[in-house]
Length: 241
Image (cartoon, rainbow, N blue to C red; front, side, top):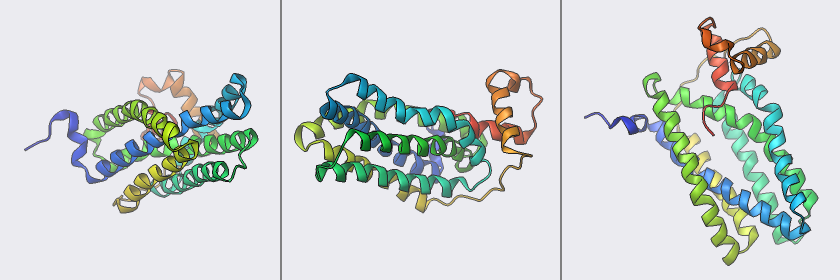
C-alpha cells in the first residue's frame, strides 16, 4: 500500500533519520536562541546589546549563505553537514561551560554568535541540498514541505522547553540541551546510507554565484539554464528554513 501523499517522503529511511534528527536539533537551536537573549540581558541589562548579539549571529548568514551554496555543490554534502554539526556542538558546549565556570561575558557571547552564524551560513544550504540526495525526485517537494513543518513545530516546542529549563535548572542547562540535541542529527547522519554523487563543476565560484543572483532576480525562471545550473541554484537558494 502506498503511503498517504502528505507522508510520501517518509518511506525513505534516510529521510526519516534526517527529519527526526533535524526536529530534535531545531528544538535545541530555539532553546539556545531564547537562552542567549536572556543571558545577554542578564549580563548587560541592555536591549541594544541583545539586538546586537542577534545581529552578529545572523550577519554571516546574510553575507555567506550564497557562497555556502556554491561550496555545497563542490563537496560531499553528507560529510560537510556532519563536520559542521560537530562544530556547532562545540559552540553550545563552550557557552554552557563558561556559564558553569562563571567566566561568561558578553564578548564571549558575541564572538561565539559570529562563529555559529558562520557555520550556519555553510550548513543551511548544504543540509537543504542534501535532501535531493536522500529522496526520490518525485518525493522531493513533499520532503521540503515536511522539513518546513518540522521547523515551524520546533519554533513552538523549543522556546517552551527553554522557559522550563531556565526556571528550573538555569541558563547553562539550555546550552547543554542544545549540544545534546545535535547528537540526534549526528547519529542520523552516521547511520545513513547515502550514494555519493559527483560534484557539480563550474568554471569558477564567482560564475556560480552570478547564476544564483540571476535566479533570485528572475532570470532563472525562463527555462534557459542547464541542468548543472539548476542544481547549483538549489544549493545556493535555501528551500525551507
